[in-house]
Length: 242
Image 1: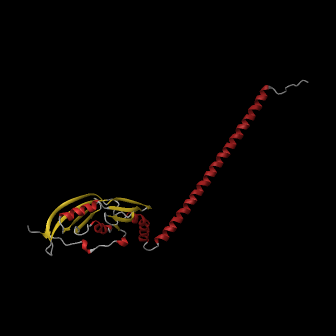
Image 2 (image 1 turned 90 degrees about the vertical axis):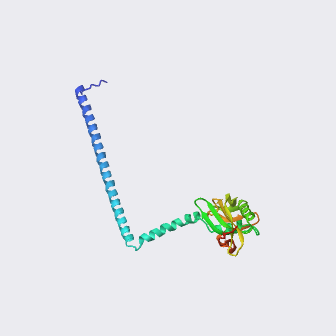
Image 3 (image 1 turned 120 degrees about the horizontal axis):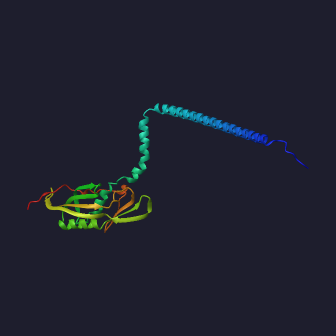
């Protein structure tokens, strides 16, 4: 069988060019329609976003007007903020009342007991300065110093009450000036000054179930058991005549 090509080469090229043009045009139209669709979608998203922002602004404005109408709102907000800080403040507060139990615990037994005319607590420096009178003279002051150095502070951590910790009550104890004086009742006494650098945990509220442990006794320092004997304090003595 013989097949004869009746389409000249030039016409075949023309038909191929037209098909390619039509294909290119179709692709261009589809691409244009896709771009228009993207623009439309972007416009819709933008309108929705603008609408949401407008609704949010109106809601904020409405709620603000409600809050502004509340009387003393500023004070209420301040109180609420302070209430949220209370737990942390309670945990980190200083329990200065323990000082009275410390004074009772470290006072030697008679006849070497002392009475205090002044006690100064310096939390920033971590120091306690004792000024007082000793009827037994220098041996009483020496006994007072040794009692401090041999006393321990026992406690449990705020976050772990199951384990007790024991540390020295004082890291350093230094004697100050001493001189003889005379009380209002005519007793001859030794006036003394003594400074101790206390353990950092001594007045911390994070130290729970706290106890002062001396060579002869153990004293609970919880707030409910703190007591201040009147015998710990005395009026200053006058300079004694030589």
